[in-house]
Amino acid sequence: MSRLMSRLQNVKLTPDYLDSGEFHPFRLPVPSLWLDIFQKIKALGYSGVSFYANWALLEGQQGNFTAEGIFAFEPFFEAASQAGLYLLARPGPYINAEVSGGGFPGWLQRTKAVLRTPDYLNYTDNYMSNIGAIIAKAQITNGGPVILVQPENEYSQGVSGPFVPNHNYFIAVEEQLRNAGIVVPFISNDQTPNGFFAPGNGTGTVDIYGHDTYPLGFDCGNPTIWPQRDLPTDYRALHLEQSPNTPYALVESQGGSIDPWGGAGFAKCEQLLNEQYERIFYKNDYSFGVTIFNVYMTYGGTNWGNLGFSGGYTSVCYPFAVVVFSFSDLIWVPMHAYAWPGKNKADYRPV
Image (cartoon, rainbow, N blue to C red; front, side):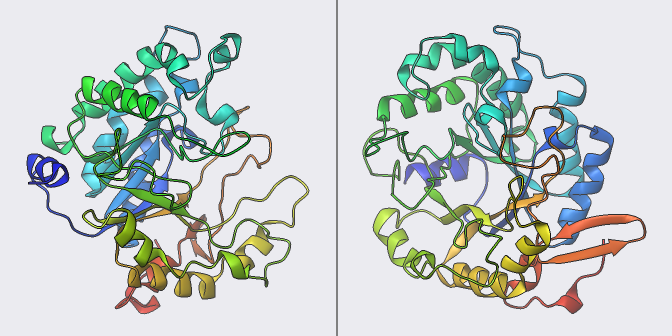
């Protein structure tokens, strides 16, 4: 029995289709609203939600980890369970997520450690042991909604020169989570389909290999131009080459676009990532055999204070192709809900 099947059997799951959307609780720090968002996500046809945990918000002072009040995860897990959604947990320690420092706390800059290498692991121990234990309690094995955990994030490139992944570092991050009680499968999100840490590809491998896909990029200023060299046509072949014995996972599939200060504006982004894009690319993803599909983003939220990175707005819309008005509420609805075979607009109602 493969390691993946063993873990799936352990959590009493079998490989199936997971249609997931990204939602970060720290961008909507009002726990009483989480169930409402989850119910809307469920109404769109999703079966799961992916979320990041932000180290900087949980250990702003070195050695003092706190996840209470608006930063507590238990209400988030309870709301997901109540809505009937599975969760993919992504605790980092590095997350990107378009947040300041990629989720690294400011005090980390005072260390001499080389980030995302074994050199800085002792600085992550406190955070990883605590966040790992919180997530472990919410695993499906304990009656919770968490079915997958992603160690690290887009560990696929360096600052300069050719990137060579440090397997010892990746193993150590996995061990931090396993030591905290994580038993559900590990999944990765290679920034591009490099095959890094795919099962059977050396040490530090995950249970399910996954990667990101942002085929149209973020050039909202030219919304009618689709870059020819970036249109994926070989994902199925790459999957069979890189990880043929695991479900095919797109852990971040482009559902919209960020827009920088002074950019073209979200109206142009909507035009770039419109229903034609999503019908073509999401159906292509389906034809490639994707069975784990996460739309980034599905609910954006707000970059409170200095939470966001310098190139983004306060609003984290990642706007989709359709805007639905329901009384006084404005929400961004992912067109992927309309793009899958057997789905059409008549199947859905404003939420």
